[in-house]
Image (cartoon, rainbow, N blue to C red; front, side, top):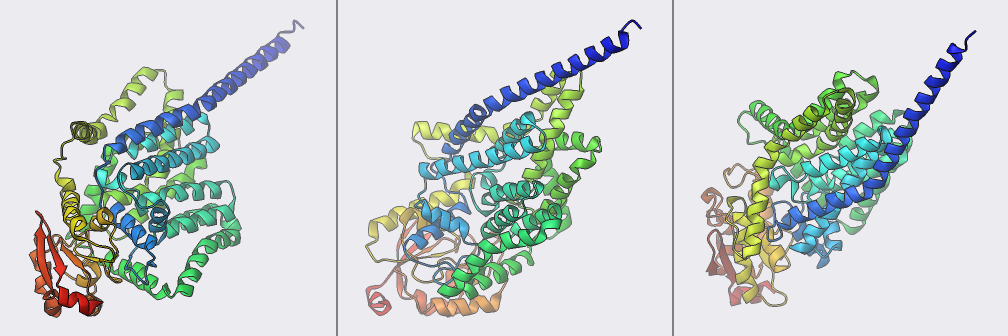
Length: 511
């Protein structure tokens, strides 16, 4: 024997050991760069969000305003109408509920937490490179999309972090932790039930620990609300109103609307689509659960048939997870990496070209100390103008009511609401996302009862921010509020609002 077989085996094992050592070395290098990489993502996110430092977006102003009312001693659902689960408002209350740079700094830290969670998830499933791709992809997606969807840290975006943590824990067979995070997601948004469903499919053998984990935060909330006498309000406002809202879509052609908005969103996230497609093209059965997560998340997007841009945030984590692995496979299996890199980079041009210039314009406005000229923020600018008048006239103990959905008035003035009703949604029965163009009440009988309750309260100021925008819902068109409105006089006007003040005789009666 010439020893060739033995020599061949030795060379083979040496090559295998070399490849293994090189792989470990590269993985170690990537792991060492992860903190710096996340720090860069944080800095970029903070810079972009600071461009919105003078803007309050719809949804975030609602939860900030509710947080301010909580700071002032009001309990949600009992003392204040609030049609969302409570955790978003309570977090903002804990932070002081301030707009401007403190809000944007919090935004950037929350996005950093989402990036870190996504990095750990993809790293644990595959490796360091996939983790870095996942963090970068989700940071990019949460910066270059419709500003009204990705800038406000509102329930849909608040829910993303516990969603990632819950499914990650379920994948690791830590059912109790998965249940806890699913319960926290549910306290941000009722669509947390879809998160629980995904965790149940991954950890079905540990369904009891999963259910126990979910029951702890939810049970604590329900017990607290029951103890404080707010449980019936929670049921009526979050569930009865929410289900009526979901079941009364104003979309004339819901199926066509669903297709159009879904393809629009996928078009702006074409890199994720390419990455996910390359993963599932391999027909790797070990990734079936990610496809199932996408399906369940899309069911959450479809609930209510509105397909608003912020709804698609629930689909983002599973699609990013799939894309992070798919892109890695593309780079590993091709001999033309430069071409692949160029193609992947070019797929980012569409969202950057569509949403990037606005950041430049906003930053230029801030540097030049000039007002923003953007129709998307016209209502917020009108809220700021109305707040200037209110802050001049208000005194300690004065209260505010807003006809319309303008919670920014409460944020900019930090005034307390007079009673449980602080905007017109429960009084007209028309939800805020449609009351600028629609006048069909969702729950007309309940709205009439609520108006009867309002007629016995006398807030010091009223800001009517709806009548000029939708005359069919004008405050003066409700006969059961005529006498009540007669106790007020107009003291100021803005472009889109009328500000009323309680007459002195009526003020004495209200006290």
